[in-house]
Length: 404
Image (cartoon, rainbow, N blue to C red):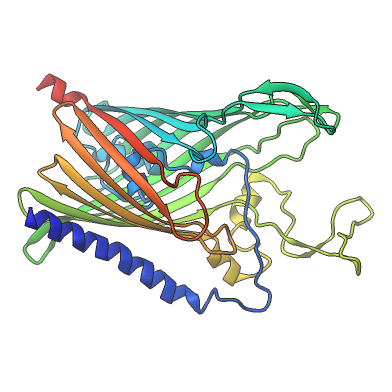
């Protein structure tokens, strides 16, 4: 028991030290300077970026380079090629805004099957229910009720390229019905739909730290590369959350019973940054001859998919400094005892001018025969979070144990 506590306290120290390092590194660069302003990036269907499982949710939402598990579809599908089990399945549930309502939640089902030593297929269903909403007109008269919902169905194929490298391609169908067909500004609304793909790579190699064996891994995943979404025929089309995720991981096998993992993720949205629009002396936006707002700094966000992705590295009106602000950081650690009991902790950082999400995550996991349970809990550090004071859980099934 003393060994367990020592390893877990070391893991917690790693998380806290990572938090301190971030603060020291960026306090001078991203401090309050002339020209600093709130400029968050918004997209349609943001539910695609929510960590759906309790393991990743307990490690600061990190997972690009962590050891493969059944939830690799969300973080990096290429990891499935190196998974030890032949087949697995899991169900996850995350309540949302529990302090305000009791009917909003995110459900997630995912599974995989190895075709042979080099090939694996996987699939998942993510469903986000927004509860029941009462629609009213401009004078407050009720015009209907509806239960908005969004879901995404995924399928992936992954393959080993060598003993150390794998790649994967995933295809995703996205459906978002937020209004139930009501009229908005004289136009009838409709569900938003899109098709997207993920492209991911994963590298792992056995290493030795002194006399301690370990596993170093690194993952890259570009997710949600797909068409824009609109909810009416005349409405401006919105980008879906195309996201670049990458990061390393290091697992150390301390002895036959104890092992600990450290991971670090970087995330950046590959969509246009909102520009600064010109205003007149009265503070009103200026329009050109075509009725479009005049851009004072930055680039036009109404761009094609390819232009929006590649231009996202250089379109921020604040220049390089603002581009750096758009990178989110996740630090996580995981301790396992005898592959049956796990403790986890993590930290997530987002710049104050880009959303200001900062939180610590904690969690635990149990494995017994066929079944496994994972739990996670989120503690916000600055602003409120929809998942605060919420216990998320995942039920994992290992079908190899059934055969045994």
